[in-house]
Length: 227
Image 1 (cartoon, rainbow, N blue to C red):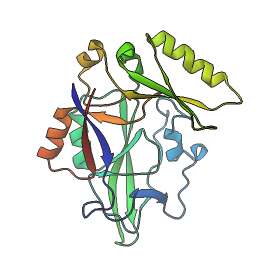
Image 2 (spheres, one colour; image 1 turned 90 degrees about the vertical axis):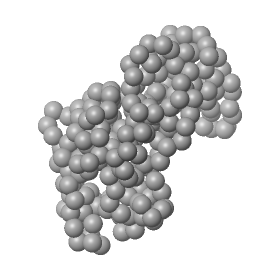
Image 3 (cartoon, helix red, strand yellow; image 1 turned 90 degrees about the horizontal axis):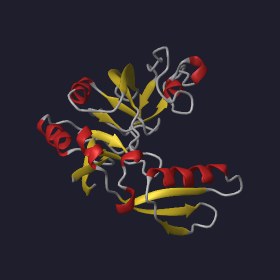
C-alpha cells in the first residue's frame, strides 16, 4: 500500500538556512524535567504523558530559520512543533494517542514571539509487521557488521530484541529495510505513524499528503514508499 515517509524541510526558501529550526532556548528558560520543562515530555522520563502540563515558553528560533507551520526541532523524534494551522490539520487526522501542549517560539533576530504547540505522539506499530514478508538486518555498532536475519513472528522478534538488550558488552540493533504490514494494521487507517523499535521513521497516508497540500501548509517534505 502506498504511504509516504516525511522529513522536515532543510535549507530552502520556505524554512530558511538553519536546520533544525528550533534547537536552543531563550535566556532564563530551563528545559529540565525537574523544572517541568520540555524534557518532561521525553520518553525516558514519561513514556506516555506528564501529569502536569510542561512550561514550553522558552524555545528560540535559529537565526537563519523562518517560521513555518511545522517546525523542525532538536527535541525528540516523538515531539512535533505546530502552529495553529498545523494543529487544526492534525486534529483532522487519524492518529495514535497524542496530546497538544501550548508553547512559544521566539525569534531574537526579528524580535517577535509566535504561539506554537508541541504535540507528543506515542506511536508503536511494530507488532503489526508482516514478519515473514519483511527484510531485517542486525547491525553491530562496534564492528559495523550488517547481518541479514529472518523472523517468522512477533514473538520471535521480541525474544531476539530482549536478548540484545541483555548484552552488556555488545551494541546490536535490529533494522527493517523492506516493510510489509498485516491487514490488521491497514484497518486502523492511521494517517501518521511510526513502526518503532526497528524503524524510527515517520510515515503518513496519501490522505495526509493530499490534505497537507490542499491547505498549503509549510515545513514538511514527502517521499513515496510502499508498505
